[in-house]
Amino acid sequence: MINKRLLIKHLLAHNDENSFYDKKRKIDISHKEGKAKFLKHICALSNSNPKNNSYIVIGIEDEDNKIVGVDFFDDSKIQNLINAYLTSPPIVQYENIPFPHLPDDKVVGLVTIRATGKITSLRKNIWKYYGGSIFLRDGSMSMPKVFDIEIKDVNSKTVEAIEINAQNNIEHTLDGVFDFMNKRKDYDAKYKVFKEYFVVCWAGQKKVVKQETFYSRVDIELINEQVRLFFSALDEVSIFLDDDSFKIIEYVNLGLQGSNKYYQLEETIIKFENNANYNIETKLLFEPPQYDKKVLFHIYNTSNAILEKLKKGIPITKREEIDLKNLPATYLICYLNLFNQALDKLNEAKPYLKAYSEELYLLHKETLRILRKVKYS
Image (cartoon, rainbow, N blue to C red; front, side, top):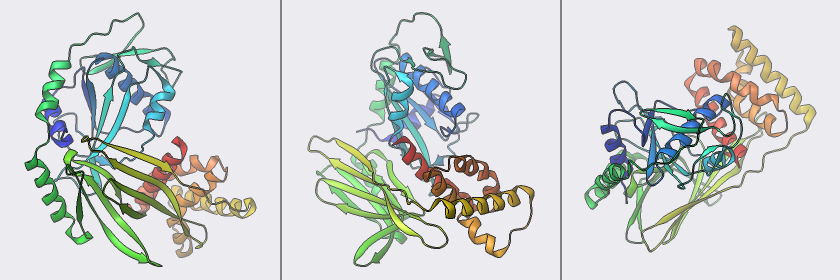
């Protein structure tokens, strides 16, 4: 089993990006340009590595290889995006890798790309790239190729050596458990061994409501691979486990004008097998709240008026402060009730909420995370 933190360190030791690995400060697949560039790199790395894995490491400064991290990204449906836009799509996995020196809410993103051995190309137009385009790695660049190409395997031995050197061992596992338990001791940290092989650590602030146990500020890691499986600063989570599996049900708190309630968002089940393998299954449970269109239209217009005030630098009243805190969730609810323009307003609000307060910016990021899960599903 590969220790993903070690793997990233070995990849970064190859200071320059090459035909089997790329590094990025960040990626943004919430808009067409970012989505297109991400797909281009996936396509190029897949074509350049037909018989071995290739990687994208996210959260790295390009100039000096400094690990700065990115936000936790938990979109399990990223393969749907790959399948929708690429022919002969590779198998793509996005994992969140914690590093001890990073803040709690930051990780390094690791994208693993496993080619099918066939030529991968764009299935349809996106941004400025045309359907049918083929990309290959040329050194550290993903370049378009407009002629017939022959897939060559030149990296297998190098990648194999890197992955062998990144294999986990008992010392790494024990160090990971002790690090987690010490770092999360204020949040009721626990661990469990599954199938005498896998070690899962988790922690969170415990709350009992009507004989049901929920957790907030939840952090869950698979120590063997140094992968963060789940992280949430805001939402409520319920946890269930037995000898074979670890199940998480995530809830989101939504509502209008103070009438909030918790809605099930997503169920994640990690199943451990006897052959030292595991798989993760996710299922969207979310049923968006529905509201009277006339009431919702009034609340939508009020939110727009507050956003205009922010944009123009006009002071916000105490009453409007409450509505401002609910602004991201309000736009989300409006969008889920077929107010399509609300999505544009949500994206438009981002820089102004970020400038206003860190709390509002965090609420905005959480809202986008929920929206991303719903859209891709």
